[in-house]
Length: 345
Image 1 (cartoon, rainbow, N blue to C red):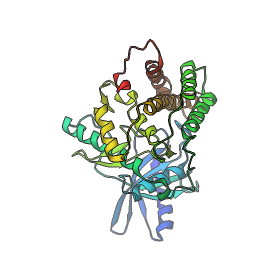
Image 2: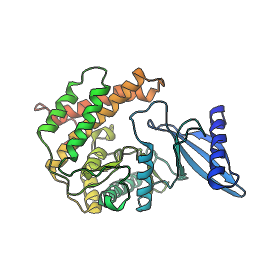
Image 3: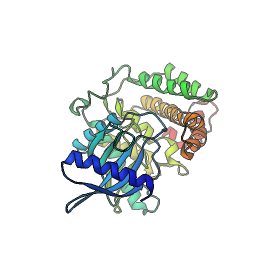
Image 4: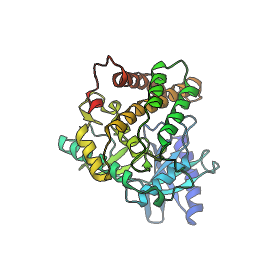
């Protein structure tokens, strides 16, 4: 292990020894690439003859978007208890004295990958079906039964859409380095064309997309990751984000590079028991791009002014903002050439 990993392992050994009231030793530290909102590390924790893989999420010096670690931990715990595939949450620690920053610990989901590039086509279809069925299952959960009242506000159904617009418009306004007329025009459109209220309020994951779940070599989804933007709201928000053309990359005909968009929506409807209203869904798709621009602009601001010059922040701030603006123009311009055909599905 390098010096940083050794220091983390030593602090985590002290922490687990205190929590478990027995001698525990943490070894094998390796940082997991990616993840712009938290540092993520893999360790092995052992005591006597026991050994367990653990994942440690650590608050970074700077982040792609400001999030609440307690909220993330609570959302994962609620999903795990409800039978949604999520890592088992073990500890949330706000005391920075152990490893220098607050952190959380989850059980490792071993033998899985987040990259589908090497899988055969039949596995891609299988993952695609599961991906949107699990999202539908999340939408079907009753927020009142999840025990999240202490960390999440239950919004007024009539106001939840505009509350999200206000939040992300504020992020753009506060973090922009230069004017963003496309985002401003889209925000005006969202305000002038409000959607109908949600069919139901649901737990919204907030960043449900390809790359944020783990699957086994045989194509079974084992864990949905990155719940740091979870909140209670309209379940169409998650569906629209998951189907944003941004995640299709160079395969616009496939949702998240997995299955056709209509199939993804059909799987979601079957699992959630809800129907997609075309008017409401179009609104949430425009919103998804505004939200995306808010995230990428925030990353630009962090790279420009922050102490940690992480390349992912600069890349997101430039490349992703440009693509998201092109998607918005394709959605809203009267001269659109519909370069993103899935946007009209």
